[in-house]
Length: 399
Ligand SMILES: Cc1ncc(COP(=O)(O)O)c(C=O)c1O
Image (cartoon, rainbow, N blue to C red; front, top):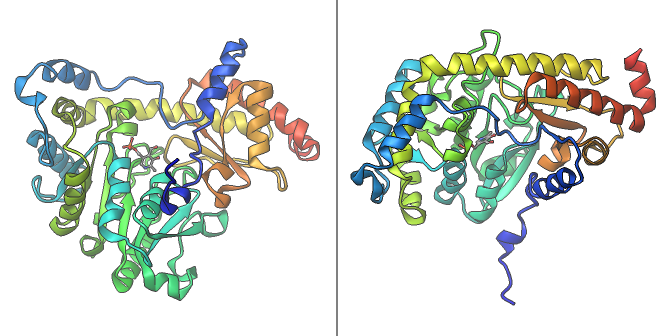
């Protein structure tokens, strides 16, 4: 039996790995399952994207390899949108990298910047491609715990000096999955300044830039002076347009950084199906008619979730952005135990904070991927489990 590599052996279990089988088992037993686990909305993509895919999938020129260049109007749509949304200019040919989902680009980027002895600073809890890319590229993952103490922000000055010296990449994601935290502009300014001083590539994952509420408008990292020297930013069609399965995203950066990612990709893929990129361009171009109404659906779900989980005995804050609630548990109640009981006894799927790494312990995450009534019902069931597992806490809050 061939043995696996040491790099491979370092990969932890994926947080969502065991859920589908368990959910199927519950459904087969006739349980009324409410799945609030993955960040994968139950809503439809823009009609313009569906129509364009149907048409583009028959165009002979789009059946061939896309290679790195791909479908040029997709690059142009990205560039025009970045200009309109953030007032930033990125050259479509040299500063935009089309991706087969942003996860693909985030993890592949590490191969251009990390090697043995170098460090990727990985916020924990956090999206798994940060540590996945770092470990598979042979780098060392330095896990920084995102806790309420720092408003879920990474403070580079808390990281030991020898780690900082070896750090080549800092992964940041605001609005944040799973904590739903957002980053104040002053914080982003200081982080860009520190990355310039320390020569660290700032990988800014902006997958939730458009899912924001109550007038909050998430920035691009490139709105910060000096960011072009040190940053690359990732965007995704997945959450903004309910297109998770389409695998469509992009990165923007100055030409040498964008070029490094494109070069790695030229050795591992041969481009996205160009009909999907054509549909992606149509989605981006339908932003004004699609996105505000879609965000309103998520806002209604967020409001329902916050009210219902509070009523059920949980102390949750109202998030300004993302499709998540990051809900604290009473001290001493392991999140994995809570999530398991909630699934087994009540048929509700949530993600335990510890599934995102030790830094996520003490919390669980729900996603707004079901209508408000189902979220309310899930909250009632979660309240019952909480009351069973932590009677003192629940009765204190419930009265
Ligand atoms: C923070 C974050 N970044 C990136 C992604 C990946 O998105 P994509 O579907 O574009 O690969 C996700 C998906 O859940 C995410 O939560």
